[in-house]
Amino acid sequence: MKRLQDKVVVILGASDERSMGAATARRFAKEGAKLVLAARSLDKLKPIAESVGGIAVACDITKEEDIANLADAAVKQFGSLDVAINYSGVNSASPIADLTREILQEACDVHFIGSALFFKHMGARMSDGGAMLTTSSLTALVAPVGLAAYAGTKRGVDQMMRIAAIEYGARGIRVNSIAPGFTLSAMTEGYFEYPSIPRSFIKEIPLGRLVTVEDIANAALWLASDEAFITGQIVDITGGQSLRRTPTEEEMMSA
Image 1 (spheres, rainbow, N blue to C red):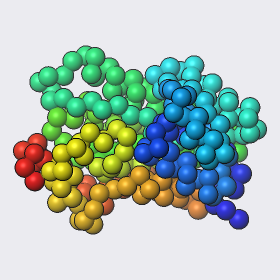
Image 2 (cartoon, rainbow, N blue to C red):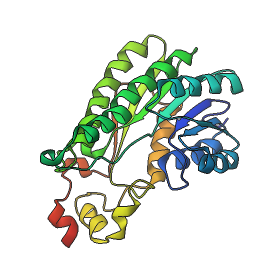
Image 3 (cartoon, helix red, strand yellow):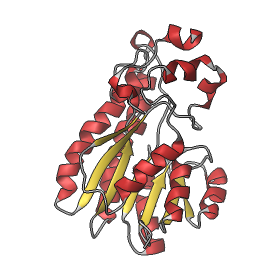
Image 4 (cartoon, helix red, strand yellow):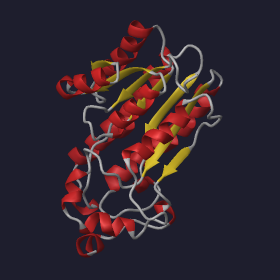
């Protein structure tokens, strides 16, 4: 028996082949999952969904109606909902001195408010236990300069996840968060144009290499499976970098 045989899985944030969402979809498909992939744009999402035998649904994490419709689409297509994973994110880099209300609001809308409504609507459609996963970050585990909006909202979601684990626990729904380290993905590819940046991160990683999207997919697989008797936890997939720190801007430019 495959580990996710006939489990109905929603993955939000899977519209790029290089993304954590697409990597997770590929991994889950091998384990027998029935997949509902979602993103704001269907153009790039549809080929990915078709490649894993799933369906594609348009969903903007900042719109509650879209989130509710996504959960409904999974139940309408497959009859149930067992696992829901939220990989949505926005790059909100700015020192506090330069922050604007717009930067803060966008980070809150996508990371904090979006995650809360994701829990609300996905949890409402789970009828016989299940698992909900959201995405934290290395930056929420340390204190990265210039990422107050990003890291702060991610950290807020981590606390909300712990509360959700208690509130949904009686229904057999496990709620956890994955905290990826610096990973080559669609959202971070611009940083890799400067070889000194990944080198500076590797220097702070005890296991000596960067995280891959496949590492994240493997962690998500375990958390989504019935093997994981775990809830309310931040699962650190940073190769140990959270034990140290993120490099400074000067180190990133000179490593």
